[in-house]
Length: 273
Image 1 (cartoon, rainbow, N blue to C red):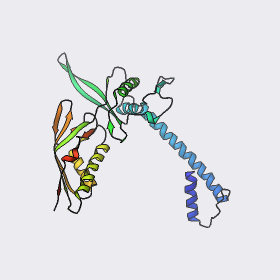
Image 2 (spheres, helix red, strand yellow):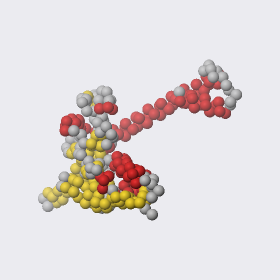
Image 3 (cartoon, rainbow, N blue to C red):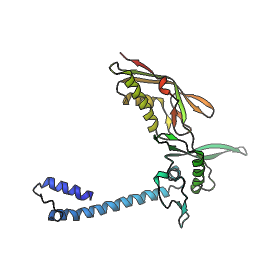
């Protein structure tokens, strides 16, 4: 129907004398005939695209995207069934039960010494995270993680160990957070905008990517009117071994991060000249 409306609008714009609004009018019947063909072609193209995408996914068996897609398809509380080729599937797709909102598979290579020779050993890790009601990333609960681990066994390749993680976001903090703002702006307004921008940056950062302090600095400068400069120094990230300092960038072990509690109280605001 979208094609019909588009063609009708274009014809009426080109020939305003066609004022008959009846669906049985000659020109509208002609438009209907053409639009039906166009809609059919569009549908076939869409079906073809879906088929090709499905084929590509299936033929990247064992690749990172294969595990990520399988993780995001997990439906908490539902049981899998198997088709004639013993491929697992859910009889009913229920997106409200798909609790894994972010997933990332990594392949790392190390070496082991056997008989005086070094041999490469690959390790495959899958990190996943859920979301709370505010859209912020959180780890799966123990019960959810147990169900997820059982589910993922149906997609693992025999002989290849898949380590699955769902961790609380690593806390990032800075010894110095300075904001210089234009004197034309109220400090309370600037402070509110800076905190909101920092939270938006956190929530929009790609899952399992490196964290760059200068990217956060640039984001605040670009998105908060009145900010002249925003400077961070003395970065630290909390890991299993305690606080670890970083400067230019840092890999987030959990795949995502949070700021320390009440981080906004540690930002110093200075009115510029």
